[in-house]
Image (cartoon, rainbow over all chains, first blue to last red; front, side, top):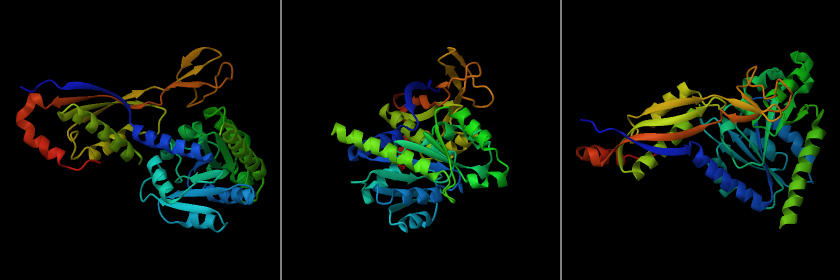
Length: 229
Length: 134
């Protein structure tokens, strides 16, 4: 006769292993006194172009480095390095998101001491990266106008987890027939407290408001860290 | 297809727990999965069937309990499922809603056959143990 199975209580979060590594990453970043931004979007929303515009604005003002996540190629890291900014490329092969362990491994070869800001450009994907904490202090989601106004409602988890939503490619709003007010309302529905900036990374319209906000966030954090040291 | 990563973690947690208890075989893994996650149950079942191979969970069933999304308005003091898709603004007073449940992704329990009761199967057990972990 088959013995009755024994039930063992587990009560464990499935992502616990990633979470533990994310906590260790976050502690390391806190010790170094730097802000870490996890930049996420669908493929082609303009993350790298936005990053180029942001980095140009910070030239000579802040010490910034970038970790790039892509399935294949180091093209994005090359674009960042061309601006004279340190960059490290993680190629995930077929994995559709970055996880905390990939960041921990990257940090072994890519020291972050002396930085003010580390930007992690995640794999272009609005689904998977939402589940994986990297240890970041700021989650920024880019949504391009050309993707249509309903994107936030279709991918609510990703938009809900964002601290900041950047509406990019506003220069294409008329051509795409997209009402920016409707898009912003849809972002608010799934994330009533997000900070929203509308801009065009290509033309530079609206970029200042975003880079000033980020610079202020970084400096406030740096001052807080210095005060507590 | 991040369900593969999720399934690997599920199998690994079950494996660790089962070995701690000196279990021979995992029969059931009970998962609580909130509706406000990015995990698709069907894709997770498929990924689980791949990831469980060569582990103590190789014949295990993954029982998925879907947990509804419940939101609460601090002003109206009401808890409901969100209206109009996932609208997190209170339809009564316009206040931002707090997510009470729906983000769960946790193993509640596992059901195992223990070693003591089925000692004649030790040979199989050793065979599974010698295979690499994920």
